[in-house]
Length: 217
Image 1 (tube, rainbow, N blue to C red):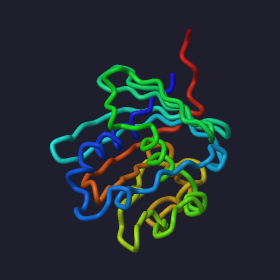
Image 2: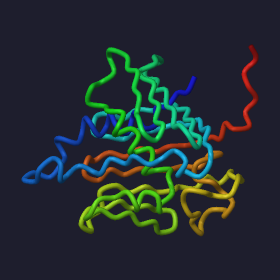
Image 3: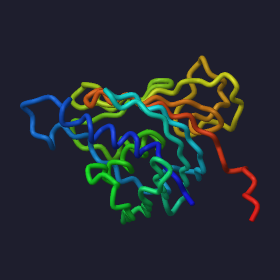
Image 4: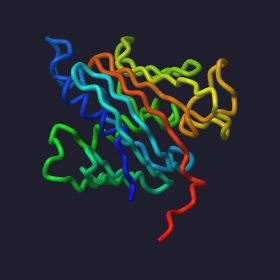
């Protein structure tokens, strides 16, 4: 079973904080970050990650665990919250399928979950090609910045884990303070997502499960 909470937590925080923190006077559509719909194959490699998250939002600090799978044809996410399966999500590059528990918040959309996931992990060039006018994505060392009209909206930062020695980095460039062989998506690598309009942060620690032995039947 695929279990993904990482992006669920991010989307929940956005749903809770977005309305209160968004700038007033501008239409909601103009304030909203673009929703990414990138092909699974554009990631360029498969993923099988177990993730531990720390969500920091006003009055909503919590920790969550995650498992994410992606290949050239699908991105699959099974969301678990409070020990219960909240939803299964499947993106095949054309259709996003959601199977939701009755208590799953309607404000937490699969579209937002998928978009935040792709902003964090997909190659910069693939994201840049999909952005509408007025939006930019710049990667400088270990930092990705999504901006609207030059103003930062979302900042994704790779934070190094000193015990890591893993495969070559694929999605983000390794900073000089990290070993060049570290992969920001794997083996203890840390990522921080700072949603500046919505005023919350999410720290994600990832562990590569590709070589994990299957559970005994």
